[in-house]
Length: 312
Image (cartoon, rainbow, N blue to C red; front, side):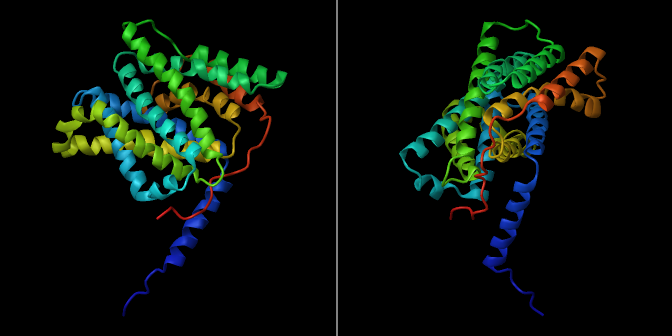
């Protein structure tokens, strides 16, 4: 007996059901998901540096993520359908993604990950401060910054070039948050379609820089599979989670929650690596969590991650 084929209407209905469930999930859950993979991905990348040049690993990450997004969202028609400002927004975001990831990998190849994370948080403090419009939120920001200070042991190691890459990555990370927030809240554009288009642009832009360093990996199935895994862990999962979170969180609130990154990294260290934190680190975690709990958004954005079908 022939099995009934699933109709396009059934597929569309299923996708809309998934989208509705995604919207009902707390935005903080998406942030935590992003934060966890924010640290898992670079950990895998550092291990791959022994087999592939640094920028080659960055290319593998972005290129594999771009292919996945292209197959999943097929964003080209969404890009073509935008006005000039919308296209420039996605091109700018793609350029930031390409250069930010290259600088980040160059930084963590020269400096401890904790040092890069601490530098990365510095300009984000300013972004959070811009949205701290009352004493309560300023106090929340102070708690979070103090907690990060206790959690992160910044060591002055490495040369000037290493710190140049780290600070460049930090500035670009702020631009990433600003542009990702604009895409997530832009009318007439699904944030995930915008992310997919920006990732394709990033892949094109980083190819002349790092593509040639990844040529050897293309003939090694193990290394190639590892690169795809890094792309999924470092770009697909966290960037999708960021879009789902930013669609429902004010940008200043999201920027403050970035303070949770060192705390989450410490928890991952306990669970995965059995690295037991000191009492000072536990105090830092408590302060960061308290800061995020005390903060109250000044406004509640409307959700723009919709349940539309991916553009064909």
